[in-house]
Image 1: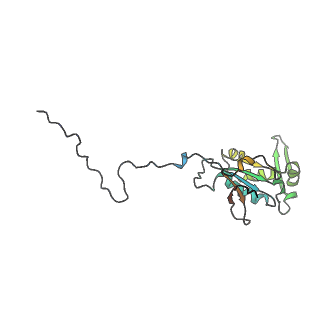
Image 2: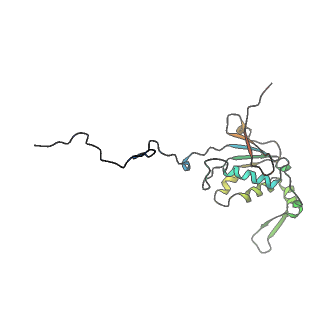
Image 3: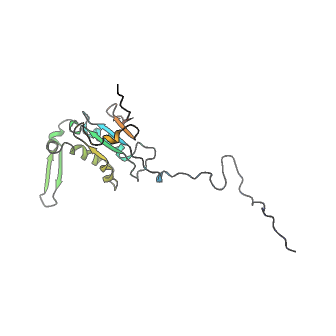
Length: 192
């Protein structure tokens, strides 16, 4: 005669289960932050009266995304940064006449030097741009991060639509000289 097996045989014995330990598949798969979609916010910085180098060192972490809990150095996690009143930043000491910017044509004797004062008269945005560029990590993400930096010489800018209430936008303020940036969300304007 044919012997048939029961429809649901006993499961084979597994490892001993202890408190806090699950055997087999997890109930919910882990979410790897490497594959999370990047949410890019907009930051509005007022450079009026700020020292150029100190301002640059506070903008760089925003461009890299170091203020986010999902920060990864190998990914471009940073936000957009809009800097106003760049022409009204301060340069300390004798930097205006002593600091020099060099470029080279590649030919013998092709080195050209320009002082900070000359560079400011030519383009007032360039000293801050170069300071930020020099402080960013030197890798393939550097140019991508620089594309998210928007510099304006005065109060007017073309990104008003990105700073509307309800969007991911912040005003950046600096409490003391060496403190990190304080981010305050954009609030709706109250009309009387």
